[in-house]
Length: 222
Image (cartoon, rainbow, N blue to C red):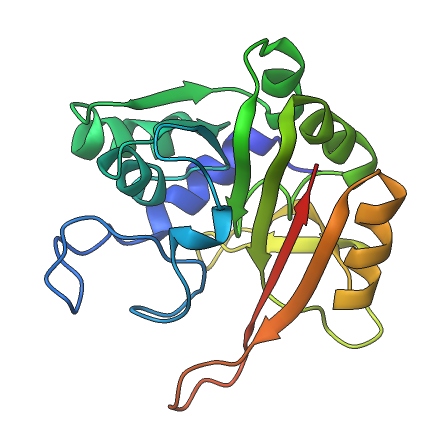
């Protein structure tokens, strides 16, 4: 299995920078899906105006920067130095934004303040063993706090731990990381097993166009 830092550093080089403005002309915005200007926004977190909110697998920081712009205390965590370098270059002066290089579980175990909400957009919740990550999240969420995450829906019949491939050059083997895939009712079951309540999981359809794969969005309360 590929070293996770190497894998996500490689992935970072393949991802384009977030646009300077979205279709509405905003300079910061929240996007749960793989499609531009599609789907719900930060309201899914139900976080208080000045609440501390954690992005697990924050990547280049666009979603966390938007939460900071809204007045939240936004904390972004990622294992990739290259992802975080890009985030700091663009968003490093944003008031209310903290960025940390760390493993998601290790960061949660070391934190002592806790969070009003924890979220992951195609991030660490998808690529971490739920048996390790979910108890750590549950421990750090304030009572009633929300966990919300999004990822690609599973391939039919391919559930639990799966291999995910990050391509490299034409003459190199792809890098391999683990991911965890479940259908909506599977995620509902897993979250309830870890003492989350008010669990909801559904697939948001893709916007009109040639691409048809939707986005699985899951939410739950501590």
